[in-house]
Length: 413
Image 1 (cartoon, rainbow, N blue to C red):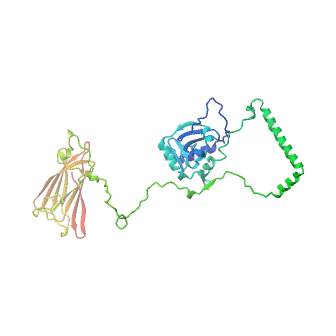
Image 2: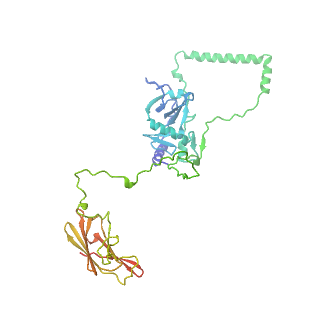
Image 3: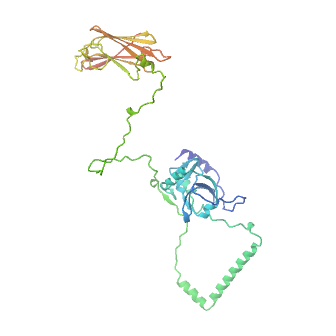
């Protein structure tokens, strides 16, 4: 249940009970808005409490279907719908006579879309039934249910409002009643009077008449179900012989893949990204560089040409890790990373950079004399950032007897 509704309900319960209002003719110069139309919100006169409702449907000779407006600003449950600034009691929808509806005042109207949404949700709210139990929702729905106790006939004029010489009309009614009584006494006192009384007594049969009270049909909690919020998944087999297509197969429209969607065209005159112009690579697009220590001069995973790349999956394990030294030097516009590694088949070094500090990097090539290898990277920092040893991550991976071992390499300055 809505927390805002609970707060308003507690404040409402603390207030005093309002006096009943009896429907009377308006005592102002204004008249009723008798021309009722679907979609209007009206205040009705002939009720024992103020009733504001939406005219939802024209039932022709049966009258008008109305949906009362809740006096609270938040829905009490899923059986109520909020449209605009008003909360409509779908469970309280009822049908009133055309005369009752014409004795009202038009205060507002709702849009066609809101009207269609309200009318489409009435059936699922089980109108005319209230929630069972003694909870807050059950008490609220019993108290505000529109029924015989709410809709009252037009009240008779009070005695103070009787026109002049109205006492003559009352006197004539009393005289007519006396004449009827005298006529009945005359019939009973004749010879046929006792026979009429005797026949009436013999034909009398006891009839048990139950007290006519307004019937409220309670709806258990499990009977009031809210509409599903998700679509159920249905698995349909369209392969033969489940379905046989007559004629041509229906055209299947496939949405474009993400790779096929082209981005906006860069206008002419806009300079390209400076990393591409200067040969730098971003750590976001190329997060890792790999240097193989097999004595060759290659830094990628691509196979070597001419027997330079001797790294293979089945290599002899090493007794000790090869020596790797890493230094960070100051360079033009940033820093320079230098790797000096001892050649060893099956070993490799991975280099990664902090993408929050390093904007781009580019390799200066690998030089080797067969026993030692030297690799240099030029690093470019973001504006306002400074590249330090904590911005570079170097790891040595070498084959041992129990498998590959990963050893972090410290970066010196």
